[in-house]
Each structure stands twice: as C-alpha cells, then as structure tokens.
Image 1 (cartoon, rainbow, N blue to C red):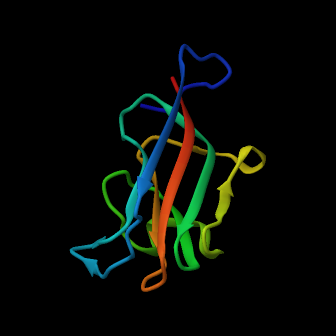
Image 2 (cartoon, one colour; image 1 turned 180 degrees about the vertical axis):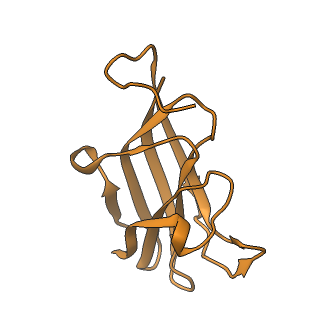
Length: 136
C-alpha cells in the first residue's frame, strides 16, 4: 500500500520513544549489521507515513559520537545500498545533548523504512529520544 495523502488525513497520533544505552555497530553478519538500535520503524504495509519531528542524542559520561541512518528496509540493515546517512559520527560532548533532527529539518518515513542509531564504539554511552507523528 502507498503512503497516505498527508493533505487529507484521518488520524495523526503523536508518539515519543526513547532508547537508553544505544548500541555500538558490530560486524556484518548474514547480510545484516548487528548492534544498530532501531528508533522508529514504519512497517511495509502500515498504511502510514511517519513524520520525525525531533531526534535528540545525549552523552552519558564521556564525550562520544552518534551516527543516525535511514534504512529503506524495515526488516534489516543491509549496508550502503540500503542506507542514507542523516548524521555521521557527530560529536556529543560529555553530559550534553545534540538535536540531530528538529522541526527545522524534519523528515518523513515512508512504508518499509526505519531509522537506526549507532554509538561510537569505546567512547561513552548515548541515550536517544525521538518524537514523531504517525499519519494515516
């Protein structure tokens, strides 16, 4: 099913989700990257479009980096051909937050897409909060 016409919608549902302790990216295993934390998924036949309003990464302890990718398959992380970088190893200072996505650069997730987050390995810990709207 195609994404709904966002001019004539029936429902807009606001959602906030979070991940405490984002994973660090591991190796490619069986055509899938291991260690990527999925923040938001829009299933293949959801009948929805998802508007990402904000995604904030917070460093807990040591300064670290955050990588945020959009994947064009909601079921797997399959390397560069299926990935668009939204942020690549952006520095998040000690006990600080970084707004990777906000109202000035919001994005839409079509069906069968997702957003994944990776913490820089061996450098601190990240928490991530994401606010979005499910539009159908």
